[in-house]
Amino acid sequence: MGAWLGATTRLAPARADGREAGHRNALAGVKAPIQEVLHCPLAFAGIHLLKDLPERSAVAYHYCKDLNADISQCVLYDDTGPEARLIGVEYLISDALYRKLPAEERAYWHDHRHEIDGGLLRSLTQSGGEEKQTLAKIRTLWGKVYHTWVSGTDYPRGPARLFWSVTGEDPFLLPPDAKLPPQLKVGAAKEQTHPATSMTQ
Image (cartoon, rainbow, N blue to C red; front, side, top):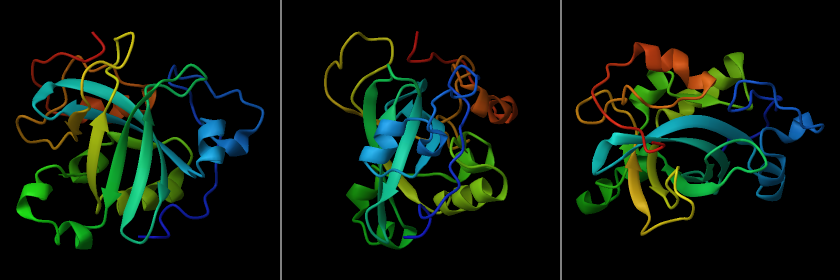
């Protein structure tokens, strides 16, 4: 897994509002300070579901890097602009490491198969075959994600909350009122949905 976040072609990606990012240093990607200071070569747009209330969703922009052959880490923001707030973290592990976890620990880790297949996780720094190759690798990984700041609140409230991926199986379905960025709307149109509320309301 160690090479999946290696050398990349970094593009000037679309902003959350659908416009092209205007930062002069296009090679720095969507969130130049984050990517350069933390050495996070890739960025993704995705949607998470609150594990114990999966009808509630939150969009997260991931800035990721490898730690070793089995573990990667991502910092999560609620947007791609200069006012974006740090809202959480996600850890990614290989399937080989996941299989070594005790049963009680596995309960905190979700797979990425359905969201990758359904277009609900997209790269902000890659396109074409390069993006497809990276997403194919992420599809094999397991994620543990905690949000510390719920969108729509004026400060981080309460404890960190465990979030989940859209799995395509009840109850982890895409809420019909989820407010998605342009990158994810094509995938959302294909999803089976159920009555729910977004965490941005």
